[in-house]
Amino acid sequence: MLTVLANWPVQPEEVEVIETRWPAECSVVYGKEYSTAELAARAAEFDVIVGQVPVEVLRRAERLRFVHVLGHGVDRLDEGEVAEILRRRKIPIARANPAAITISEFVLMSLVALNRRLIQVHEALAYRGDWSQALLSNRLKGGLGGELFGTTLCIAGLGSIGQAIAERARAFGMRVGALTRQPENYDAASLGLDFIGSLASPEPHLAKAQHLVLALPLNEGTRSFLTAERLLAMPRGSFLVNIGRAAMVDQKAMYEALASGHLAGAAIDVWPNEELKSYPSSYPIHHFNVIMTPHSCAITRESRIRALDAVGDNLRRTLRSEALLSAASLGD
Image 1 (cartoon, rainbow, N blue to C red):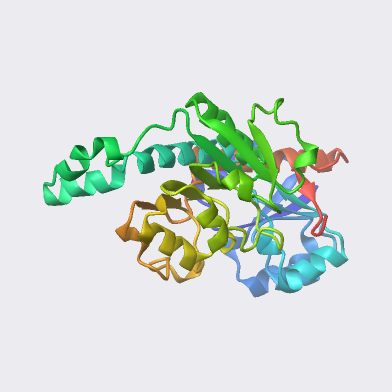
Image 2 (tube, rainbow, N blue to C red; image 1 turned 180 degrees about the vertical axis):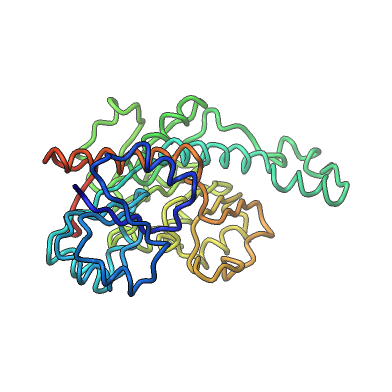
């Protein structure tokens, strides 16, 4: 028997999935029904924590076997006393990795919408009755954008999300390449990529990319990756999509690139101060060809079911004394 703390605001529909698709040998404690102090008092019972990991609980969870996140990234566990305890006790963190399909569809949707100025044209017609005649008359100058076909996409990050984006971009007839920390570990031809470059020296590849997608995990190697200099290394009139983390991008430089037209557009799903739940940028980027979403590109019914199924699979593997899937310790 495993005692599992499901510690996020579990919805009734999620309870149904958990009760029908997690192993019957698991006793599930729903964290939303208890205060943090009450969970800390019960911490010695927990074999697995899924979702949020309060430090007060982690300190006392002496028999904890692993932590399971419901998404792809572990950066939110990699700080403060939580990270120190996980490292010291070598507690594995398993990732659900459920959203490659969901996010890659969002990315391609965004690239099409940005190229065709869809948000700007929609708002002009819907709210002002403006038929965008000025843009229409500038067709040959790119007033209403262009096609993805034949253009170059550079994907920073070559995990499951990056590879799913590449697969879909190729279907649009794009030339696709990637940047990764260890390009020598990949074979471009076998992945259907035109190039694979290093995150440490991306400028030659940025210089030929009309589109850049950030699909990286946040760590010390990727923090502040997209500097002002690297933005300017991209061709004038290029597009940016960030579905990774806001801390990878110089926010002031991005705003200035949009204002100058060096960036023709951007789709942003991640923000510097998401906890404030207000206008998410320090700069008025919505005045430009920008799609702004509230860190929601991974959120669909299908991706949540995949996440819960991934947890269920790892619980079954634990009961059978098998290795966890998609698991690592902090610092690996």
